[in-house]
Image (cartoon, rainbow, N blue to C red; front, side, top):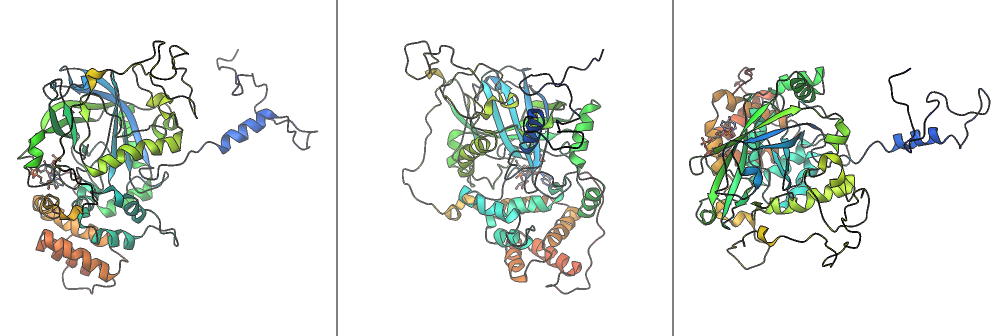
Length: 504
Ligand code: NDP
């Protein structure tokens, strides 16, 4: 007797034959009544869901967050209370622009999305492998993403659109410089850092608020590919990151990240020379030193990629008592747009899907709609609030402390008019950290990315590089000349041999 379970239809009815459809005669046509065939074809037609508009290509795994430093001084969130506490979590990494089937080894920002299954509900930190982003006002986000995706007429990616947008949006310079540096093409996700990027808040049981930034430092070291190496890898395999993550975990080589926070007392936000809620800025380590608080380890591959990674739904709106938001404009918009994207892609009740389901009791009053598989009303009469039938009630002890704001004027404030939003100072600090090899690769990566871009757009961008550092502008000009860009004549100068070193 076979050890396999018997095959059934989705309704559980046993299947007698899964190789031959029902026909009239040996060669004859099919019958509508072959519901087994019809169910199978109908399911195949529905096997795809809308891919994510951004971050479509992803790789993920489950793991553990171990807290090594108690943070109850800053936050009441139980995930951060109690040294040694372990919390199960899920990570999904991704590229931003490529579609679901895009090659892995492409120069792009990597998503670094984490879901912590805590006893107080799911906490999601939906960050990137960079501490900053291309914009500080979410009104620009759809336009920015359009420049990264395909041109409507050619259906090709458009370097002209990218540099046209960037050259007129200098707040992107910090992120563009990181993207074009070695860290813009990591060999895989184990060898890169993660950052919460936004400023969030902690609040403790005394009602005190602190601003906080999260950092995840790779314990594997940084590794990257140069452009020629990346192109070679794509020629060999389009799935280099998936292969690296999956097989590392399968063989027990579990990747780890040291978790750090930077903490700023609430009122300091009024004193810093930079806007601490500007997503194009970091907090200098010298002013707010990173504090080590734990370790993140990925140790379990998904059993089913589609169910557990493609359907994983991360949203910055998932916070806990003790963790809050900040006035960061982009964070505020993401609180809406991420959960909304999941409602569209997965269905209204997407948090009923096992990978998204909190691993703690859930009691709410949302009622019907697609995917509502949870029979969650403990008492069927208590399906509205207030009620007299013992339905779930709010806990006022968990109320967030009030947020102080420095203005009561509503306007479309120009984000470029804020002195704290200077677009160049922090980019100069980064440029000065690069050694000669890193600078040389930065220049040639930019020159590669500018091939085919009209000269007038390149010249606008070169002005911004020059404001960061004269050597930045000169280096890119030299690389453009050396590469034979059609708008820049060949000069005597030469590009230095690409350094194929792999580690910072
Ligand atoms: P610090 O010199 O104290 O910090 C420098 C940090 O820059 C390092 O800790 C490292 O961050 C990161 N870094 C070092 N080398 C590179 C590199 N080749 N490519 C990318 N990042 C690198 O100075 P500041 O804190 O004042 O920061 C200076 C600049 O460093 C910033 O303007 C920003 O561009 C960049 N940076 C700063 C971070 C921060 O949180 N302050 C975080 C990341 C980058 P890490 O340890 O995270 O790898």
